[in-house]
Length: 170
Image (cartoon, rainbow, N blue to C red):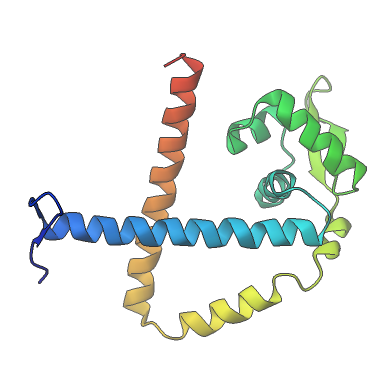
């Protein structure tokens, strides 16, 4: 069990605070590595990191999305998303189509064949993930999955809270 550590000011830090700091530090490192990895993937296919992540949102969706939905999911303004869609369309990754249920709406549909341009860019990551997963038991993997799922939900909620605060001028 961790013991309290004195801080430079002479205060003691609780074991829980030490653990939170360790996980916050690991989270920052993971975030930095993830951002750098995806920046390289984006460059590999000739996209900006923002365009690549918006394309990923469209790829992961169960159906074509509206520009407003992409804005909501990405946290970008609708104006910024229009520029992203324009660039993705020019690059051949998406196309705009009319909503068959409401012809007034325009949907963004992923051009599936265009994803082959990613080629083997993710192969090294999949191989490393496969190797890493084998180092853990099923129970450990379940705990990791629960923790990551919880953190993703928390980060999305915090991002929304910050966006709402900006919209209110706070």
